[in-house]
Amino acid sequence: MFSDADLDTWAWGSLGLAVIATFIWRLAGVTVAGRIKPDSAVFDWVSSVAYAMVSGLMVRIVLFPTGSIAETPFEDRTIGLIVAVAVWYWRGKSLFPGLFAGVSAFAALLLLRRHGVL
Amino acid sequence: MIGTGEDIGARGAFRAGIVDAIGIPGMGLFVSMMGFGAIALEAGLGPWVTFLSTAFVWGLPGQVAYAELYGSAASWFALFAAVTLANMRMLPMTASGLPLMHLSGHGVGFAGRCLTAQFLAITGWAHLAIASERYPPNRVFPYYIGLSIVIYCCALAGTMVGYYMNDFASDTATRIAVFSTPIYLILMVLGARRVMNQWAVGLGIVLCPPLYLVIGDWSVMAAGLVGGTAAFLLKRQKESPLV
Image (cartoon, rainbow over all chains, first blue to last red; front, side, top):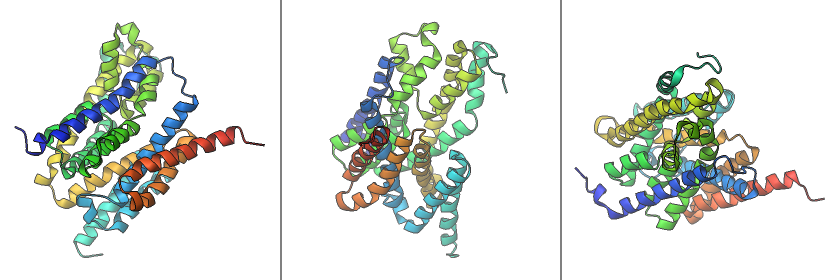
């Protein structure tokens, strides 16, 4: 029923940390719902740090990945990212056209390389 | 399309939530969670841990941070801090989303509110805002339940399909699935409504890659702190410039 990877204690411990790290915000949200001041300075700062961190992590995953996409060319990932952002912007900052275009561009480049066209 | 404010009853609202979720929200989450499943496999997480991370964390940026930092054997503090910050959006989403559901009118107590909040993430929150404009206040909660059930199932299914897709799909398909998740999240944060958060996203994108070459996985936190603080200070400077 459990794989070897499931038996890693640190995996379960870190999952517990991840669950707690997320639930504390939800709990705080429940507690302050209707009373929160979303324009307070501390709130602004934490929110800003969170946005910068998520964007930084995601770009790091695209440009310096681990795992199987590390074997794909850097330029293919970069082009996929640029196409996604360009189409997202062109289509009125609409998420799904940007996602579809970026992933399609990346997929097309991979397939062209696989078939020796590039 | 149902007219603004039309009362379709609790069952009708529940059904409308289900119908709305079957489409872009459900498919979008299915695909992005497929990417997470593939990332989790590559990070060395087991299938149960991966499945439960979607079930109980229920916040894609934090889940990706968790899997990535687990895979790179980061310290527990770095992992906890990264997930905490990555899913910090849950606070404003919960605080602003719960009042839209008028839970006291449905007799939902504190534990029920926590459970309701547990199922609230970006997709559900975005649809709550739409539903609150479309339906009477007492129909938003049943709508949310219908929507949440479907997107939750799609996300769990997507996670496991992504986790096991190596068994039935080519390496290329797996790589495409893995690539789709960070792209989805980058576009999502780029769409931040507030200018300060847009600056923070831009600074995070610019700072993290070069920092990664110098300080490795700590670059995520460093880019977050430096970029986020700089965006925050820029906003304050703009609001009250020094003479």
